[in-house]
Image 1: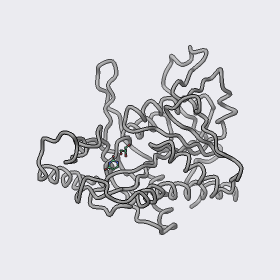
Image 2: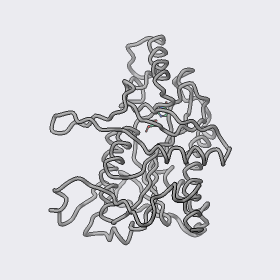
Image 3: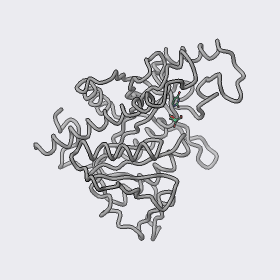
Length: 310
Ligand code: R2B
Ligand code: URA
């Protein structure tokens, strides 16, 4: 890959945008859920060099991602126990190695949305430029073998529409869920180079719930039949939905508003046309969860190597 394809030329830097006139009036912007702040921490010194951010649900997985990045970038320190930068709180965990930041976001739209507000402000206060962000995670596949990686083309809602609805002052505001098509293509190329697992480009349905919201028959409540479920999932498939998860829509919307190049890379843990319960053994699920990390890790390593060669 030509580094010029992956990143903007040095002469044309893209800042991280916030759209909030009230922020200028804050003497100390407290990023409460990170336990960081603009007065208590030197954010430009701590984060000014960040070029890649990877976010994912579990704190444990985000620590293992930074350990993996350290190993593939040759930045591993056998004595280092990568410290959690947000150790003052147990809401989110954050790790950093060189230009790579890894942050957990919990489950669901409200949780990732709070994290992204503070992450975007953090990158803005740190004067970061040209940042690429990835959500790596798990999902339920539709008509795909378990373990398939899906790079999201468009994040769609439960009616298969590419939008995220945010309620502001009691009014519903529609936000666009476009992701960077070039970044998605570059990730697919990386997957071909790796040749380790199947990777698809497709739409991702983002839901508000894991059970009824994803047409499962095994929640505490269920008011529909197995046939209703199959019909809904087949309709989703016809609309180009390859997988279902719970954060991509607000992730796409917020990244677009802030000028972050963004991609969603999720592995499927099961084929929802065949069942609802996660029956694979722990080791198999763990190895599936490493696949988005391997793909994004390869992409980051390649871009950093291309830049060194320039
Ligand atoms: C995927 O997996 C989680 C639910 O198990 C949720 O955070 C998601 O998007
Ligand atoms: N995550 C989801 O949101 N759904 C699944 O089916 C599996 C993982």
